Image 1 (tube, rainbow, N blue to C red):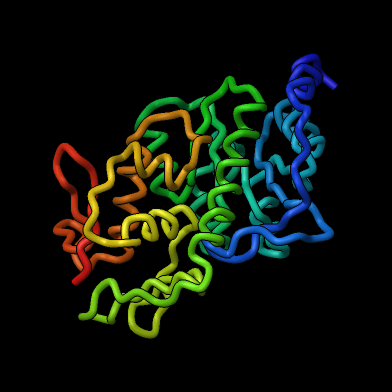
Image 2: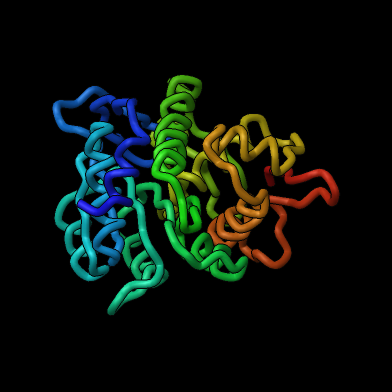
Length: 267
């Protein structure tokens, strides 16, 4: 083990409970005999080994890969609960992996990368990532963000338990938010949204008509584990608009209130 890897492991004294992610967005966690499955895609041997050992020390089942192609095959063959993904890889890069894996999994994705340019961060989030951590990083920061991604769905599942369906757009579909089922539908077709997008939509529509600032949405959707730029909210709003708006360039449902934030207007 390298000195860096050993140092990383010294940052931990908290054990993660053996809970498993249960479905899309709001179903939360349930007691299980197996630990939470965490995919780690990182081609640097020292970082990959360090992260895997540190996460296993916290109770995760770490599935570590150096190549995106192998990681993608793993996700397709057996579901994972969370993912840590580097962008600069040999062969398929991290951006392509995120786009491909989103066709098979809605599990939250945290990017870990040395690329700190705003363009790269936005591109990764628009590809389907939920959060972004720049290198060098401390493993305890990654752990905190993983806990935040796990914690918020569990809280929301308790708050929304027993809730039914909400019609968001009565025409052209209609567009329905099924909170109990954890899905969004346009007519008979399911609209495929990530867990973060689903939570964002729930916060904006329960109830609709409120203006929520970026900071409020960060606290409600990302909980207290996000330490970065508030523009992450803008990126996810844009992604959500491409999925629920008939004309994302002229949104009628998810509207911007200049200087204040965002509001959902049912149609």
